[in-house]
Image (cartoon, rainbow, N blue to C red):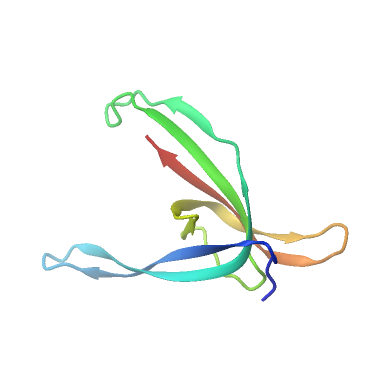
Length: 118
């Protein structure tokens, strides 16, 4: 598996198989964690807004995110969560594949990550 020599570690969190509680309700399974070394990480633009719906009571909301380029062979799904620098983000959309237009080299999956606070 090829990685970036000066990249950083990133952990993919994949939901485990759901179980049932004593009342028969679905309970999320334990996350399976897979750590990938040497990932390229760079920021995405943040946005701010004020939510006016009753369920958020007019709180300020900030949406920020990162882009991550994983090593070749990494497995990332749209339903995964990703921990970068101790912060957990949601995968936004399907991971893409990158092929350099200059060299033809195929790299690992590229994902857009999003986190909403507030």
